[in-house]
Every structure is written in C-alpha cells, then in structure tokens.
Image: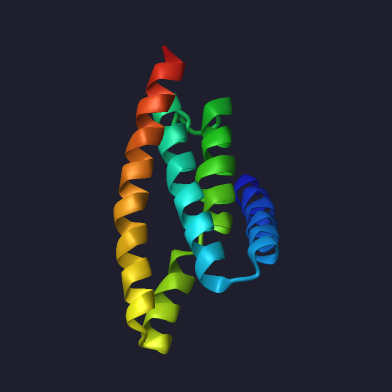
Length: 117
C-alpha cells in the first residue's frame, strides 16, 4: 500500500513536469535527472537502503524509493523514444542522461552523507 501511494504521487509529479515543459525531450531529462539526484540523496541519508521490515524507516524507504521515485522517473519512456524515433538526437540524450544521472546520484549520495553526520 505504501509503495502504491508513493507511486501515485510520483506519477502526478511526473505529469506536472511534463505539462510545465511541454517538450518530451526536456521533460524526460528533468524527470530522470531529478530522480537520480533524489535517490542518491535518499541513499546518502540512509533512507533508501531497505531497513528491517515493519519499521518506520522501511516504510519511508518504500514510500520514497520504489514508490514516489518509481512512479516519477520514466527511463522506459526514454528507451521507447530512442527506438521509435531512430533519431541520433534521442541517442545523444540517452547517453547524456546516463552519464549525468550517475554523476547526480553520486552527488546526492555525498550530500546525503554530509547531512546525515
């Protein structure tokens, strides 16, 4: 139930970003990069590592990680755009998102670790 609730909020947040940018490429980049940074931050804070089931942090992990961020990020949509469009632009966007996503996740982990101290 907690994951479903988080996913619902994540999906609504994704839709809002898509409406704000009104451009598929830009909205996908913002969504996926924001998701990478946020998940990295959650990991750094110790909130995205599965905790003992039934405890408060475990529920928070489920709500925010697989729930909200699972509903918010949309890597599969990016994959479909790359395949369907066949455009080199989409392939470049995929490469940029992979590289930037890893870098932002690392930054999020580091910031979360600093905040946790």
